[in-house]
Amino acid sequence: MAVRTIIRMGHPTLRLPARPLRPNEIGSEAIRQLLGDMRDTLKDEGGIGLAAPQINEPVRLAIIEIPGGASRYGTLEPMPLTVFVNPRIEVIDPATAGCWEGCLSVPGLRGFVERPQHVRVTFDTLQGEPAMLELSGFPATVVQHEFDHLDGKLFVDRITDLTKLVFEDEYKRYIEP
Ligand code: NI
Image (cartoon, rainbow, N blue to C red; front, side):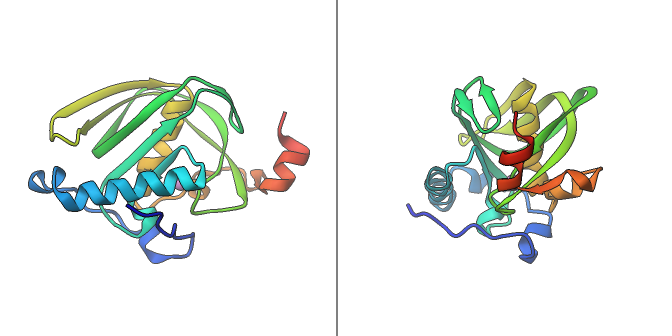
């Protein structure tokens, strides 16, 4: 396993739709290794989510781990490390809420993005079994952010008021409660 380089906004891979994993690939050694690299990379960066395209692997695979307690996103309910293979999102309630998002592929910036706060995620597990999660609040925002990466989208595309795209340092100084 290894810490991989996270590609940044401007790298063409971040703008391509990623391809689904085939059933016979899901449990393969190659995918196991890729996931190990994704875990190592996420841990090294101290992020909460990483999509495979962010390490220049254009496949529909993402991991999310939300540590509980205080964070730069406020006080959070924990979410254990979860692997999402070929995920799809369905909005259960279209009511949105805003969050100051950041992204390892857009370092140093934060942007205010509004997204639905109640979604259902269907995906495959590493065993190739179908799974489903219903998520509300911050975890709903996180899955939408991560799965956007699988469609070549970045959070900056979702900012409707560009006065709310700011540098991290200025965010901490002027905006963070
Ligand atoms: Ni991101």
